[in-house]
Length: 488
Image (cartoon, rainbow, N blue to C red; front, side, top):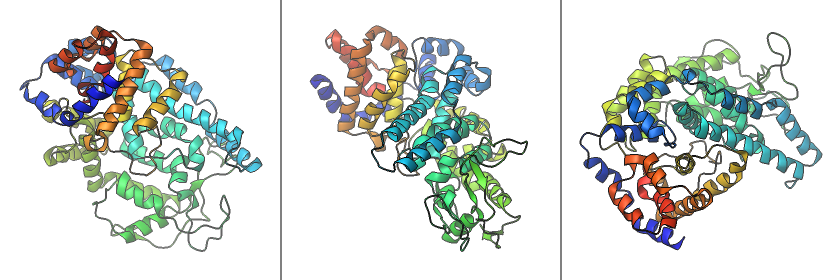
């Protein structure tokens, strides 16, 4: 472990410059380099055999395959996910609330077990597709959108709702229409609870609320809906627009007990409800327009406007370029992606196609130019060593990621973590990654030759030579902890 730490600490000073040096070596990337690049950006990293398969089919064919996830069957994984989410969210929430009612103390053992199970469910909902799904781009986009619409698992009822939020609000729309995704997150109880919109009422409503009190206007969700989810901080809105949007969204709340009745009879599967008693029906002017309609339709209209707004297109395009291409997006590329978003009516698949087929995505300086976030690093470790998702992986993975500063679903603020080199690169972080890589290598004992074949040109000649010069028992760990592996 001492050797690993020393190696990583000495590499920290040069790691930031490494991608530019590697990119400069290849004016025209080889087919193998492009296959490795596709697997590192469109997927969570290569598994054994992936590189040869993608090189044989060509990276563009791989992209076309990934843009049509519905054509990639995964019956076993679908069954596992369905079983994981077999208990209705309403029942889970009611059981948690009942344990709170019986014993509100922080150390309630029953509630701690409920939270432990819910965290395991959430982590497996993320990890199973990341490790085992052939629909890798869909899994990557599910993760991207979760961080875009971030919910903190440590807040109250969110402790038992985040797994359902990913499974039912994010994943089904991750490559569909942005407006559908926006609506699904707006109505999911995890978001309603996290940003407090379930408590927001018109002034003077005098409606009893969960936990006591009679409410009042809450602007938390309205602010983040515009600043983070759609228009962006420079999207052209004012504080008055925040207040007016909060008024528009009064009454969007979470049902108590068994919930509202579905249109066709029986209980609705959703915990979302619109409560007209809480809604402000007064006249409103928002983003320079009078708000039409009444009741819930006003909120739906507002989401329509936000989803098609030019500032939303630019904001989302910037984040997608930063995620898939480089940390400092070129304005021309952002404009190109934003235009595709607008032209397609907010179709995420079409927007991705415009981005990922642009020459910038495979430009020499793009290859290896990103630094893996802790979550991407950890998942790529597991994929490179051929691991499949198992429940027993959850606890060590959570502990390892907590040590790296990105425990799953634990980002406390609505902005979510940044996927940039500056956010994650420092010497101590590299040493912690070395520890994680060493522990995994010790447990699974991967073959260095097989790892090199799996990772291919992502591991440069200097790193290969340096690893080969070390004792065989350390080679796999050093390879997985190397700066080359941590770039993608």
